[in-house]
Length: 272
Image 1: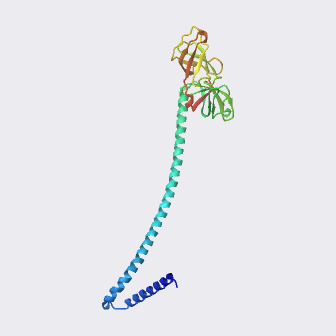
Image 2: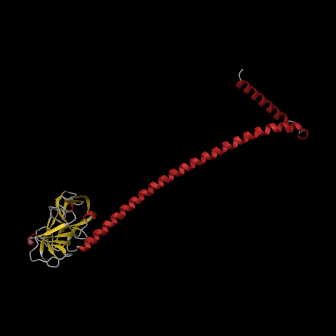
Image 3: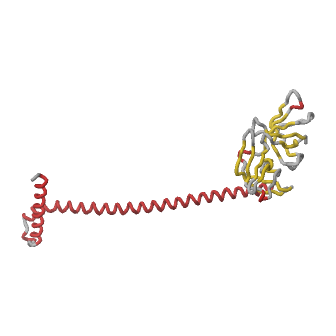
C-alpha cells in the first residue's frame, strides 16, 4: 500500500471521528461540557473556518461574474448608442454641406440676376498643364447644351463642351486650348486670353494693340465677341506685363478670378 493510499485512509478515519464527536456533543448537556469541549472545539473550529471561507469565496466569485455580465451588457449598449450617434453626425454634416451649397446657389443667383441659370456642382476634375476640364452633375435633362457659359461667384469658369443626360463636361479658361475674347477695364482695349502649358493657374493676354497702355492690377472682362461668352463677366486681373524686343509680341499674365483648385459650385447660363 503506497503513501497516498495510507493518507486517504487516515483522512477518512479523522473525518469519521469528527462526525461522531459532533453527534455526541449535540446530545450532551451544555453544563457538563468542560475540558473535553475545549479540546474538540480546537479541532473542529479550524475545519469549520476553512469551509466558511470557501463558501464566502464562492459567493464572492458569483457576484463578480454577475457584475461582469452587467458590464458586458452595458458596453454593448454603449457601442450601439455610439454607432447611432456617428450616423447622426454624418447626417448632420451632409445637411450642413447641402445647406452651404444652397446658400452658394442663392448668392450666385442674386449676383447674376441678368441671366437665366441652372445651378450645378463639380463631381469630377481633370486639371493639368495639358487639359483642364470639369464634370458637373447636370446634363441635357436639365436643359444643358454645348457652348453654354459656366460661371462661379468670382467670375468666368469656362463653357460646356459635351453633354450627357445627367452630366456635362466643361472646358475651363485655364485649359491650354481655351481662348477668350477679352477687354481691359481701364482702357477698353481688346485682347485675347489663353491658357498656358507652363502654368495651369495663369492666363496669357496677347494680341495687345501697339498703342495700348496696360496697367498692372487692371481687371479683364469678357468682351462678348466670339459667340460663346456674354459680355461683362470678369476673367481675372493683370499680374505682370511682359515687354519684348518686338512690341507686337508683348503680352501680359492674368491671374484668374476663380480659384479652380477650390471650385465646387457653379451656374450654367442657359439663356441671356
